[in-house]
Structures are given as C-alpha cells and as structure tokens.
Length: 158
Image 1 (cartoon, helix red, strand yellow):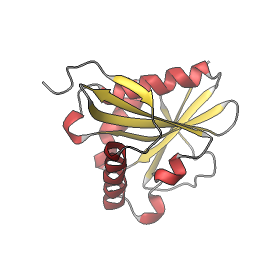
Image 2: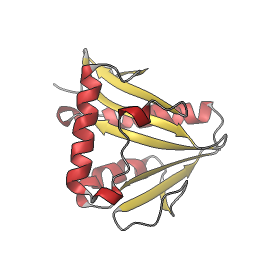
Image 3: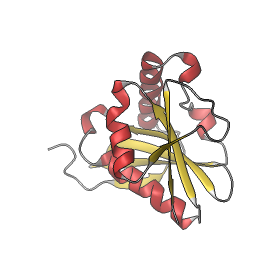
C-alpha cells in the first residue's frame, strides 16, 4: 500500500530530476488555481537562496514530498513549498514533513512559524493539516499583501 513505508526526510540540493519534476508540477498547479499575482510558490533558483533550507521526503526509494523553511529573522520563519506527490496524498507524508519543519524551527530557536496558502477549495486539505498542527489564521506578514486568494497562518513555537 502506498504510504505504508517509513518516510525519510533529508536536506536536498534541488538538483535531482525527481524534485525538479515535483516542483514543476507544484508551480503548474498553483498557476492553474490562483491568478498570477497570488502565486507565491518559489522556483528552483529562489529555493536555493541561503535563507532557505529545503527538504525532500522519501519512502521506499520514491520521492513522496517536499518542504522548506525560510528564515525571515532570528525569531520568525516561514514554511514554503510544501508539496506531496499525487500518489502519496493522505498517507501521512505531508504531516511528516510539517512535523519535521516545526521541529527544525524549534531547534533553531524560532518563536514563530508562519505560512501562506490558498483560499480556494483545492487548498482546504492543506489548511486543515496546518490547523491540526496549531496554526491559526493571521494577517499578512513579511511583505505579503492582503489578498482574497491567500490565507495567512501562524503559530507560536515557545
């Protein structure tokens, strides 16, 4: 059964064809759902910036998902590029990645972790996952603007 294997999460350099394909799929999906001015997903070059740590999740040798932590300052981080492959949705891969990022943010001493996701129905499962992990809606942060296509969420870590 897909998803039954142990999930291993590792820092990724974004050079492998599997992650490039998953991120291209992610960007295509975001652009098909949201208007261009409301797509905040990062491309490969943006994800390679020094303030971003990027991870991939693997099970039985297969890429099952990804996620990143962007450091805004010493106390505030942002979750970026959370994605689970279509075959692995609702198998725990997203929750595993989210737990990993929250744990890493705590390890780094951050006091707050935030994210931006879509307001459209397609994003409801993601919003439910974030809410189940203690994230609550908030206003725009870190240069984002109020946008009817965006939902901003945050949670304290201390």
